[in-house]
Length: 167
Ligand SMILES: CC(C)(COP(=O)(O)OP(=O)(O)OC[C@H]1O[C@@H](n2cnc3c(N)ncnc32)[C@H](O)[C@@H]1OP(=O)(O)O)[C@@H](O)C(=O)NCCC(=O)NCCS
Image (cartoon, rainbow, N blue to C red; front, side, top):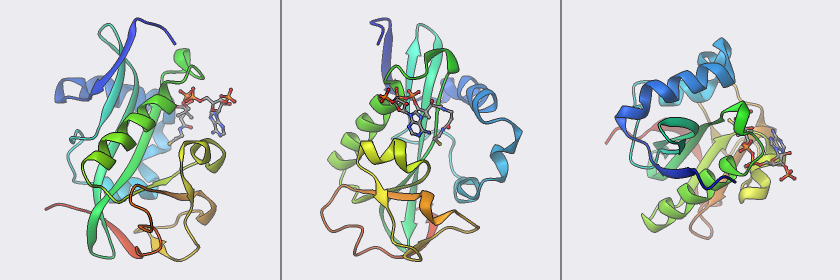
């Protein structure tokens, strides 16, 4: 990791750079993903969103969305996580996830859910959600639906459909 790179909360001023990074990293297919349906209509920048910056340049970004699962709150949807290809594999993705989980735990969030690669997120504290326990408003590969408990037992006591928490 470079000492010239720092991490901080994302602000509205970062939005243009974050959206550009998403376009570069994920391409045009990104809007068809089911997780986007959950996030639709929610603020692009919310309190847990975080970025890594090199000077003025956003080199990694992690979006977090407050959700309810089966009508219950105290949960977050993690993603997208995007790291500039030039800075891949240098620990910034892992660092942003760890920092966000710490902040969420401190704020009383019980569960963080995501759709992503288990080989990557498994090392960061996420496990597979039992098939059928948590649903999104669209198709999701059940092998990629993962969750991290920030309160012990939170996953076992959570089930149902994920919706954005607009409260
Ligand atoms: C996937 C991504 C978020 C990882 O962030 P990163 O900062 O490059 O990765 P980190 O430095 O935190 O971690 C690197 C480690 O994760 C591994 N890794 C990276 N992507 C992986 C994946 N999809 N599955 C399994 N392992 C992966 C690397 O091999 C490396 O392993 P090592 O520590 O044993 O060498 C980033 O590369 C990225 O934006 N990729 C394109 C978008 C994407 O696929 N996002 C998926 C999440 S929505």
